[in-house]
Image (cartoon, rainbow, N blue to C red; front, side, top):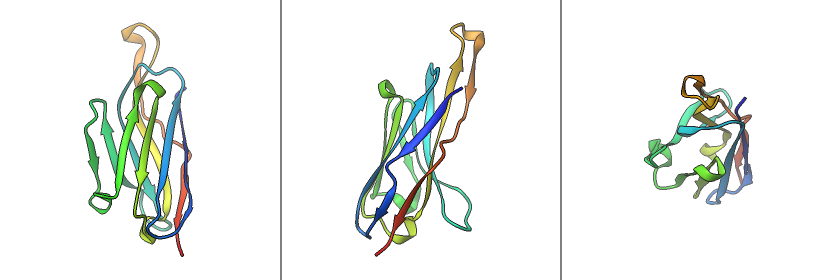
Length: 125
């Protein structure tokens, strides 16, 4: 069973920075893509940024120029560098990935799309 574990959240003042990490464990043959989402109290979960296996990154408009997503296939990890954080960025941040797992033989492999447990980011004075 593939699992994702996030870390790096915390309390920061406006204008500050945090770097979130997402590490995958389990049998993984390939990452198709990974994404960071967030959910603020009383709001729906929304996509923040995503990165494809080829390294193509996409960002929500509200984080463009401030956040950077990156991946490290060797470490089975993805990162979200968040700069110039604002109070409206306060939320629980979740990692999600589309992963090929299963057995060694091709017909034994299948896709999973696990979610991490989330990490709290709070931006306040």
